[in-house]
Amino acid sequence: MGKIRVLSDDLVSKIAAGEIVERPASVVKELVENSIDAGSASIEIELESGGRRLIRVSDDGEGMARDEALLCLERHATSKIKDVKDLFSLTSLGFRGEAIPSIASVSRFRMITKTHSDMTGTMLRVDGGVLRGVEEAGSPPGTDIEVKDLFFNTPPRLKFMKRPETELSNVVDIVEREAIPRPGVAFELRSDGRVLLRFPARDSVRERIESVYPGTRLFPVEGGEEGVRLTGFLGSPLEGRSTARKLYTYVNGRAVRDRFLTRAVLGAYGKMLEKGRFPEGVLFVELPPGDVDVNVHPTKNEVRFKNPGLVSGIVSSCIGRMLGNAPWLASYGRAPGSEPYWQGLTRERSSS
Ligand SMILES: Nc1ncnc2c1ncn2[C@@H]1O[C@H](COP(=O)(O)OP(=O)(O)O)[C@@H](O)[C@H]1O
Ligand SMILES: [Mg+2]
Image 1 (cartoon, rainbow, N blue to C red):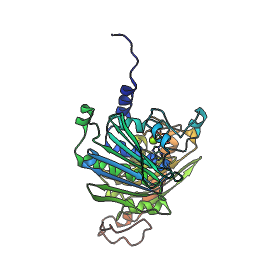
Image 2 (tube, rainbow, N blue to C red):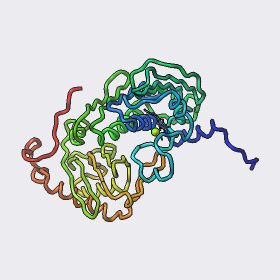
Image 3 (cartoon, rainbow, N blue to C red):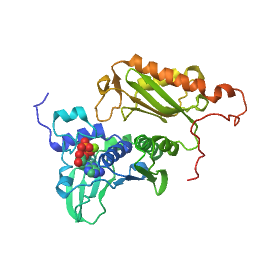
Image 4 (spheres, helix red, strand yellow):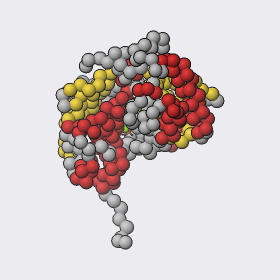
């Protein structure tokens, strides 16, 4: 072993970047969550080459004044918590103050931002973690961040990038996942000039889900006991998918990809679902904050329930009820298209 050394800030942010910024979808997640935290009504995401060449996120949120814009490049600079008690009453998605400096350390980064009260905005550029310039810029209120040439200065990471189509489909998942519980925020995702997703602002989660799953029949799931509440819309076992990607689960409003929950859902579908298939749809679990440990690791989105048996029991009974009432039981073996009487969501796939 050599001598102990304190790592340089630059190296520390590259290491943190390795944890937070694994791929284009993680950049999109961090930037979109910042836009949501900034109170935006409309968020636009634009990609080139699956995010490898360009990721751009622009919002109409509260924006930043010049000194805030400079400060947000520093590690652990955040406007979202002040002291330790805030950790236990978090309402924002971010709080570590690591995303912006991490992203800026592994890309060519440009931010234009303006508050609603300032007359002019600020533009700043950072190349691979090095501040290249700060100037005044004309801009509408809000924040516009461009991330070019992701991982240009960390070649090993670059090698791990998947094909643009794969990276793109991960970004689609992230945008859907963030958009579902926030119907009041409009989202648009464009890739190489084409509109891939367009979710206009809506009044209810149900209407937002209709835009996310056009043409898919989803059935309401609802119930709960002992302080645990389950709501959502899930698909027919006859229309399972080969992956769990389009099954979006949330715990207390936070998106999670939790194996325990997925397994509970699969268990509830049981034999009705062909082996290796997953239902699509959306499930919200609400429970007292003390009954769940929402892991606050920057990227892991697993959770730990204090009483897992209670949660899986409720998942099982609610989904069981939905499956028992749904029309396919009666229409097993019947010609498709002859299911006249259910209440699920239906909408034709739009042409766009
Ligand atoms: N789109 C945005 N609009 C307004 N402020 C932003 C935006 N993105 C980042 N910020 C500011 O920069 C700070 C740092 O962002 P980030 O590095 O993601 O850390 P965190 O979100 O954990 O606070 C935020 O706390 C916020 O004050
Ligand atoms: Mg953040």
